[in-house]
Image 1: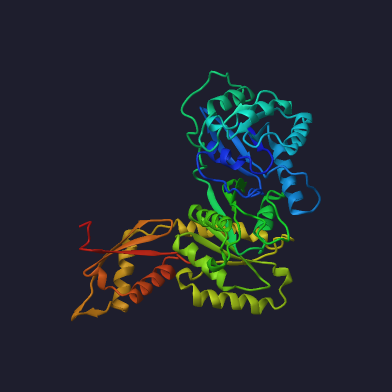
Image 2: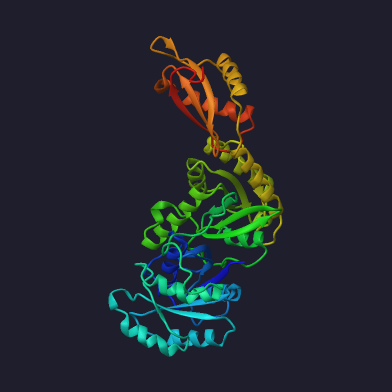
Length: 450
């Protein structure tokens, strides 16, 4: 097993900036507001040839109980328990604060080895704070600049012995990116409006309190990726922040949070759109669904809090009717009802996810596809434009994920959207491509394969 390193420290010392530097991409949100990171976030890190698992944590604060800050500290405590090594970060420019000293005492008394790093040391600005960090009693502080990538070789020297590597085992370049991204795993994003139960569902699926939950709207701020295995299938589960209507998103931090969720949708293979069964399918839910479709992702609609719905038959009929009217491009999308809090119905969700994933990856052979095209055109020919009927000559599938087809026509620009919808619906019904986006790219010319 690789070395696991938890990055800890008080709020706003640069933990997420260092985490992003080590994993080689902007995976964690970075903002000057203290306390942006709430959940623990994991990533495969690489530093000068040393590969390890890094955990970004919420800022250490003196808080407890069932408050939001207390629950954040519980998440950090779990990260510390999981880690082989604790990397404590202090802000060299601000100097050592009483909160730094308080938590250094706690870490020093723990059974875990600790490496102390003094951040923001670029340009000599943190020289005084670097000297002051000695008094924390955690050994020699490593001067670094997470933002500018300075001091990473010294950080390697401090980390390498804990991984069983000699200090002179330097290979490659600093901050050269993370390790394997888990190719072959299914990326599954849980998305929806704020406070519909996304984090509760993630914890229910994982069987542990992996991400922060609570009654406060907007507890989750950045997308949290969790590597997981279900019945032998590798999954990268993504918990996301709730998406509000764009007109209501005004603060820069919330815009960053929304952008992180949008990126999670782009990287997902399947998105579970979680809606509140008591409130029903709202306009914002449909907006999120359209974005999932525009990105070409497969989607499952999960209706949460189903145990609290009084008229279940009426509510599910209302949801299906609205989907049919508002999202014809996702006709046949699977709908599953559940309660993330009690677990009822959750067992049906992942089989459905993998079913829609297989459809999203589906391929139609060229022979049957063109026989279908000929019969479809015979039943309902394309329109006449400027005295001549449009001719559709050939069709082939050019990619999957989502299913995408090239259609060769005599006049591609003249093929109306209504006729493309007719073809799309036919493909969906006759080849079992229900519930996934279908794209048709028009091309000019004859059959390119004869």
